[in-house]
Length: 222
Image (tube, rainbow, N blue to C red; front, top):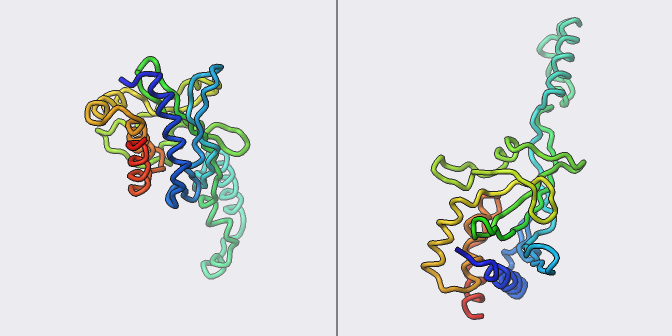
């Protein structure tokens, strides 16, 4: 297992290497790897964190809007039937109600777990008014996973630092994957970097191969 002192040391080195490389592929439309920061002030647990990431998704029709549609349909039934040639000219909001978008805020952090002896990726997902998003909705937004792939196993608990309800990728299988890394890779910060490259795709943020290689080389040389 990864020791807590290794996580603290390696997390700091990974952040330094990312900021030093200034790679063009570090930034996507919503995600900037160079914005990861390491916090270790002896008052809280050592933690890697990323500023809020904002994404737009297609808004699902909830129960309230379904009810509104049913009321509208009933009202229309009470009126004269509109001929097909006239129905074409109806306002767009009647036909595009389910295509509205919703803006969602993601907050990512990585905290070392003493229980499992591995880092754990936490994320809090909410709408702009602060309403938390349901697990079922989050799973719709994340990449499809095969039945045998454990990365789609999302649990919820209080964040170990701020106490807020947060989702996390369950670390059970992380332990075995990290064990393989520890056995096959030299004991340096590149292990944590390799771990990050494995889990970030599970939350729609894969690390570009060339960027991964550049940071890996920087860490191996340091």
